[in-house]
Amino acid sequence: MNRDTLEKRVKELMVDKTKVEKISQIDNTAPISEYFNSISYIQFVIAVEDEFDLDFEDEILDAANFKNLNDVINILLDIIQKNDLEQ
Amino acid sequence: MIWNNKGVYSVQKLDFEVKMTELCDCMMASLVNAAIYFERNYEYLFKPIWVFGYSNSKNTDEPFWKRLNTPLMEHPHDQLKKYHGIDLICNKGVSYNKFLDDVKNQIAIKKPVPIEFDAFHCPWAGVYHKAYLLHYSLVVGYNNACDILYCVDPYVTNKTVEFPIAELEKGFHYHYIFELTEPEMGTENWKADIRNLLQYKQIGEGGINSYDMIRLLARDIYHTTSFLEEMKKQNDFYTYELFYQLKYMTHSRLNYGMFLRYIMNKEHVFEIEPFIQDFNKTSALWRQVWLKFTKITYLNNYEKAPTIIDSIYHLMMQIADLEENMANALLIITQ
Image 1 (spheres, helix red, strand yellow):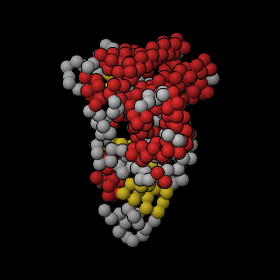
Image 2: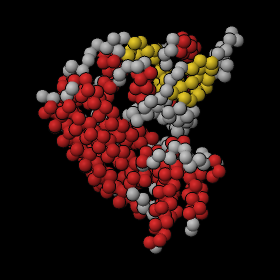
Image 3: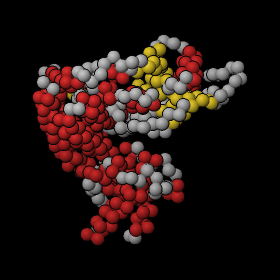
Image 4: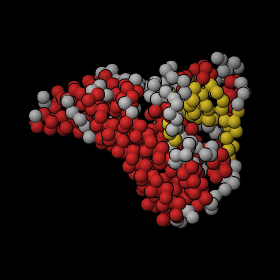
């Protein structure tokens, strides 16, 4: 799966867990707190884990470790693609 | 509710900026930000908050998280008055109209108004129209053409939010008026201030000190077969108390470190500095526990649960050891 397709799928999972209605409404440069509280963020991380059969490190669970949505999405995509390559 | 029956409408809003959100509860979050607004210190609010309570009762069917508590030995309002000269005059039993008049009068003299109310009626809270919980925030303005109060609630958001006065009335308990006075005390008795809390933690509850209570909870989670069943029942409404307690543990350690830094700077006791780092460390460990509990709550694949439970157990044991060592070392410094 290429990076654009992956990003689209990750954002669809995000839409499921937030009040955002469409992917087009997501601003990658916005702080994570614009979209998530601590619970909905973890629900989103779990959804990504389940979708891509992954088990993220603890640091990913903490939204405070990321400056904005772009940071989270890039790290998630890196991990997903690395996992794909290993398989 | 028609607030203004004279046809004179106005919008008044204080220039109130939320500066801090990582605070242990909604009252602390409001009071710290109010103190910053008044350009006062607030650190003695944190004097009693390095606590942990877990009831040892075996005679109850209560889930483990209902046995968690935060046993404060002093009320934060008293600390704010005594050490920082910010008094809160409670207005229990007055009418809602009197409260609205007070809002107008206090905003006119540039003072926010603390309110206690039920979060069931709090439109910006996650439990809005889901759960009944005591909540605390600050009114910082009003628009009486729209019958709206402007509030800040730094425990939940760093934004100014709107509260329809008809909705607040349904869950309103009472309000306070701020009075600014001279502080009665300074930091001169800092050793006793710290030592008293350490002794209180050592006495603990039911013959178990604060650190062993953390170990007891860790063992209960690890060995109780019902733990996972209990976590499976959770949802936003049911777990609110559990997440509240875990957030409290995380932020209270961070905030107690701020209290120590205040003393260090005022009294020039630089041997306290390593403890400030330790409180940041224990706060980070509690944060991991909190996030892992949240993850278990919302897991779809329960095969992952045993690994997470094992990790929570070891983190809590590490926290208990760290906090007990910190307490023993602080006791020596404060002799």
